[in-house]
Image (cartoon, rainbow, N blue to C red; front, side, top):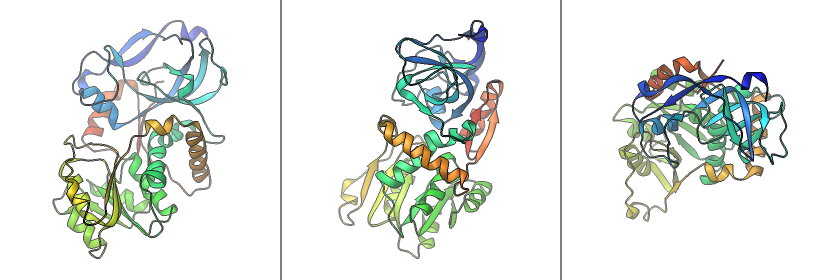
Length: 334
């Protein structure tokens, strides 16, 4: 432990569920790594819509114990190790996943939740590849998967997962990619990143517009993260043998599935959760190296939608919930 870790640090914490205003910057003791944990000097924390869901007190797979430090995804340098940590040393730069703690100057993580940063990859840029990139790859290669010539519909096509999925779908053989986005700017960004068509997700006519773009045939694969009526319309848009992969419910209205809809056309609905994939070290390491190579060779563009400070975390969440952002958002603690 160095001298800097002996004093208090700044962290964004919440003491109750609510809107962005419940997040406050506080001075708290630097956490100490327990056995099997490391302490990371945070260079940047990733921001995910799941952070807002957790702050609001809506469904989240892990309990939130107050006071709670926001942020489950971060990158930085290991500055201390708890007892029993092997394979990682002080000074290593890593990606880390933890049950909170990332919106801070220092954070702890379990050694099993550490991912080495591939050589030559900027760790801050790389944050877009950890949750969002791994999600896009796992859906397109495994949960879907996309097949050569498929038409793929990507919801939130201007977001962190969406912009990567648009590009990766083409790399993996999709014949046409349709991006959904709520603003003209996001639709333009999706088109700039390789989408063939961009439809207005805020319009009641988005599904008809998407079907028209396929010549009336429908789509083969949908990356679905909205829920509610959008989910229902996505199922209706499928061709025979098509698949909807549900990886979120950003609209906060749960999807309702009538199984009898699936039978006549042999269509499928697949639920997706990244966490089990992250428990497979071979998947995370190999996939991040693949993505890093794509970035280095210019085949994959990472869109950073904004860099925020701890003090502007409230502003960041307001913009994210209002769907005014695109690409990957990050918090820079210093």
